[in-house]
Length: 442
Image (cartoon, rainbow, N blue to C red; front, top):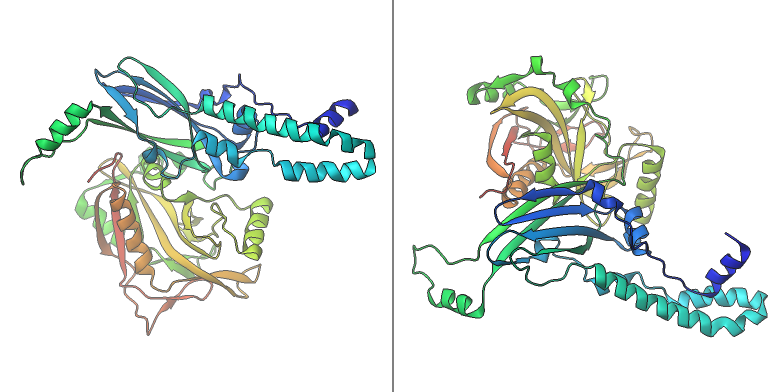
C-alpha cells in the first residue's frame, strides 16, 4: 500500500465491508421437516470482520446466518429469543462498532501538531466518519434477519447478531405458526377447562450444535476410536452397568498413580455429539494447555477477569489424563464449575459410558504442589457440584434418566479426604449417573 493511500486512510474514515463474501456457507448445517427447511452458519471472528468490515468479535458479537424456507400452509415466525435471549438488533450491533469520531479525531489531531496543514482537513475527518457510520448502519440493516412472518413457500434469510461463543455454539431455531387476530381471540375464548388440553400454536424446533473455529479445544486431537475399539466394548445390562460403575476407582490420581486426587463422582451416558449438544448451551469447552493459553490464564488471574475457555489442569484415570473438560465460569477466572470426563469401553443401550469428576472452584491459594505456586481452592462439598450437573441437564431437558450408584465411600466434614493439592472434601460417596437425551425431553 502506497504512502498516499496510508495518508488518505488516515485523513478519511473508510468503511469497506466485503459484500460478496459467502465463504461461511461452506460450513453451514441444514435440517428440515414437513414444515420448514433451515440452514445455519456461525461466523468466526475473521469472517465477521471480513463481511461486515468491523471487528464484531472484539465487542462480543457473533453473527449467525439463517436461511428458512416455509414448507407449511401457514405463515411462520422465527423466535429470536430461543437463539439468544441477549441478541443484538442490526442497528445495535452496528452502533457497538461505530467509528468513534472523538477517538479518531484525537489521533488525527496528534498528527496535525506535527503537520500543521492537516488541521485544515479536520472537517473532512468528521464528515467521512459520520458517513462511514451511516453506511455501516445501512449495511447491517440490509443483512439482518427481518423479524416478520414468512409466508408459505417463501424463503427468508439474514443474520441474527448473538453474543460471542467459541468452540461449540448451540443454536436453537424455533418457528411458530402465525394466525390472524380472529384465530388468536377464538383460541383464547375457547380455553379448555381443567384437565383438557390447552390451545397452542404449532411449533417447529430445530437444534444445531455448530463447531466454531477460534480456540484450540483440549479434545481436538483426541482419537476416541483408539480409546474404544469395537472389540473392547462391553454392552451392559442395567445390573451389569451398576456393578461395573461401583467397581470404578474411588478417585482420580497423579500421573504416576501414587497419590489420590478428586473423587470420581460422575457418569454420563451418550454419544460424544449428544454430550456436546447437551452441555453446549450452558457450558464452555476448555482450551489445550500451551504457552498462549497459559498467558491468557495468568493475565485473567492478575486482572481478576473471566477466561471462559481456560485450560483445566490434568488429573489421571485409567492411566491417562482426562479426554476432555467442560466448565462454567463466573466473572473471575478464580471461580468456576468444571468437570473432566474419560471415555470407557462400557456401553449401555448402544451408547458409550463416560466417567468423570466435577467440582467447584471458589478461589485461589498459595501452594508448593504446583509449578506456578498457586492453585484453585475447591468447595469441599463436592456433592453439590455433582448434583448441580443433574439439575442443570434436567432443567435443560437433556436428561432421559438420572440416579446414583455407590462410589468411593463416604467421608465427613470432620474427617475429610484431600485432593492432589491438599484441598479437603467431604461426600456421601455416591456417583451420579445421567442418561443423556439426543433431543429435548421432559
